[in-house]
Length: 71
Image 1: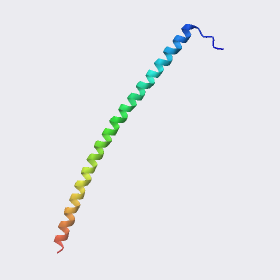
Image 2: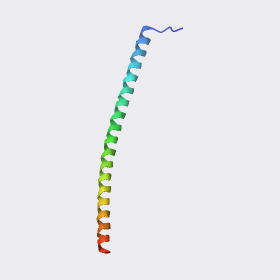
Image 3: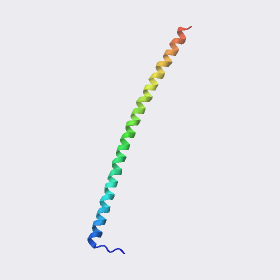
């Protein structure tokens, strides 16, 4: 059934090893990119939360001033 020569078998094993290493390297690179994107998104979310807190403070102060002006 399988009548491979020794050299064909060696080439096949080396080829499978090389392909698996390339696949691992690609997965590792994708994980680094995903980690970088996650960190960037976390930083952006933090800035947006800070901006929302500032807007809430401004609105609260405006409502408080309007309430006292209407007395």
